Image (cartoon, rainbow, N blue to C red; front, side):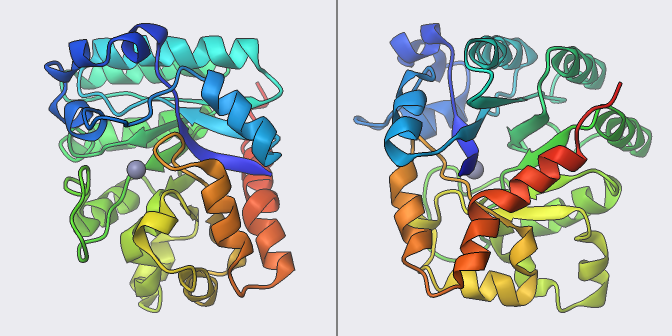
Length: 284
Ligand SMILES: [Zn+2]
C-alpha cells in the first residue's frame, strides 16, 4: 500500500507552530485549532507501521514565502535520507515572490532526490499569476526532471471548511492546459473535475492527470469511488490520506468498505501510483 498524500513539518515548526502563524495566514487557519495534529515524520512512520502502508509520499505545506518553502523542503529531504525505503519526498515552491527563485528551488529539489512538487496551494503560491513564457519553463522543468505535480483542489459547492477557498476549478483547468504534458495528481478527487470528463475538451487535458482520495471521509460518501471509476476509470484514482489531518487507517477502511471491485481497490491502493512513479523515474 502506498499513501500519495501526507504532510510533514520541520521540528522547529512542530515544536512551536504558533510562531509561524503570523508568517502565513493559511497555516494559521489550518493548524491553529486546538488538537490539530502536526507531525515531523515520527507519527507518520508509526502510523504506516500500524496501517501496513509500505510507502508514503511526504509533502510539506504550501507556504507563500520561498524561505519557508526551503525550510519545509529541507525537513522532507532529511526524512527521505533517514527513511529511504518508506518515504517518497515531494517538495514545495512558491512563485508569489519570485518565479526564478521558485524555479531554482525545483532544480535543487530534483538533485536531492525529490520526486514531485506539492501539495501546491496554487493561488497563494503564485501558480495562477505567472507569464505564458514562465508556464512553458515550468512545464519543461517538471517534465525534464521527471517530477509529478500534486495540486490542492477543492469543491466549488458543499460545506465550507478551512482551506476550501483558493483553488477554483476554472483556474485549475487553466493551469492544467498551460502545463500540458506534466504528470499531475489533483488532490481531493480534483474538486469534482472528473465529472466533467464527459466533455470531450475536458477529457483531452486529463490524459496525464490522476486523482487522489485525500480527506475523502470528510468530504464524500464512499460511493464516490464508483462515480470516479465510471468517469475517469480505476487506473486514474490514487489512495491518499491527508495524514496527519486525517488518519491513514480511516481512509483505508473507507475505501475497503466501498462497493467497488477488489481489483480496483488494489489499483487504487498500490498499482496506479507505483506505475506513475516507475514511468516517471528519472534516468539521468
Ligand atoms: Zn489539500
